[in-house]
Picture 1 (spheres, rainbow, N blue to C red):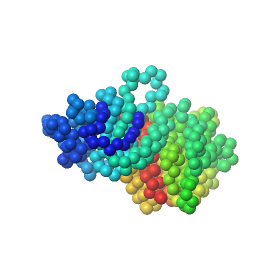
Picture 2: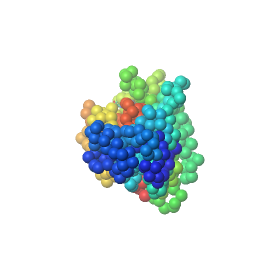
Picture 3: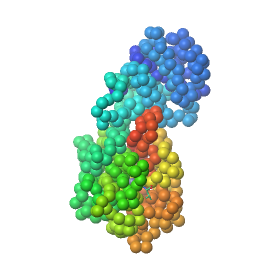
Length: 488
Ligand code: BES
Ligand code: ZN
Ligand code: ZN
């Protein structure tokens, strides 16, 4: 799909489908009014007939019979202006692309509803909405497949830079989605490492991958234990981006949970609970996707991406409930449940991250079902013992149009992690599972500023919905990029 920007008038621009937004209960925009004039008031008449007032996702469409440059005009409701954030704009463009695909109209024009960064959000939405994961199907459905060849934004030249940036970011998010969507027999720890190594072609990017022997030599006892029954060897991945510009300060360090499959280990999951567990590396996909964008955007901020990648499998060599592990930090952990494995892998990655003297560590992990129980499957849990950092992350998420909600840390709940035999156990009490998981991580972040995002819910979508496609969502990339933007 080719994206471009043109200053053409809406009535003049030649395309198959021209899409305009309307905010709920507001008068039509100047662009819509001009088109309506050229169409002899047919848009207004159709809108009245359909009781269309700009309600979210409602629409009015007309064939123009050659009276304007577009063959068909579609007015799409944006909902109430004060409720419509960047996500609504992305949805808007994705719905426009859906309509164009359904009508087999390959040449699309989009009129941004406002100035500033609307054009960029529309570009992002069009590209994210057009994402498909169909490379594992040998026979494509619906051949020849409908395609949108071009999306042109009717905006002035100032929008160009934002649209180019959006193209890069959409590419990175879609690559992150693919990593999540690939099953565990394809997306192995080595595959994640290979993805990371591919980033080293960009200026300022260095990639280090530790193999199993190096992981053992360093004493990363959490990552080693979780992966020890797997045939696929673990990988510890470090992507380091250093800006060209000197003196940019301490790095922002992103840490991702990279469980390419989580069977639960000896504390085995049910069949139903296991099938989706190829997505248990979505935190690492968000980190690698962000680094993919960073490598291309070259911001003036040092950013590192750290991933602990492995499979939690089962066999004669499994780690066991009751085992005591010596972690990378030197602390000991009594394993009470082998399905609480993500925190063991993250603990080693967080300790490694803390050694980098970061300005802050942000970790992302599909960590607990409890977080989904509490917040549903569209919102990530945000945890931090640093109010200023929590606010920064929450603000970045809001600006990015990704939903996060802060949950508390509670020293009382943390007591449930106390162990008789070791420094700490990996399993909290019966209540507040997302919180106790976060408090386990807190033991390993040293004195670094740290925030944790539990993305178990929003990492995957059950169905297509606007710019979100069923499967891996790439959740987190936009928030992290926003955070990096703000760290300048
Ligand atoms: N990967 C899972 C969490 C998860 C569950 C992510 C569902 C996405 C969807 C994690 O490793 C896990 O199994 N957590 C356990 C922790 C428990 C044993 C303390 C859980 O949530 O049940
Ligand atoms: Zn698990
Ligand atoms: Zn897991």
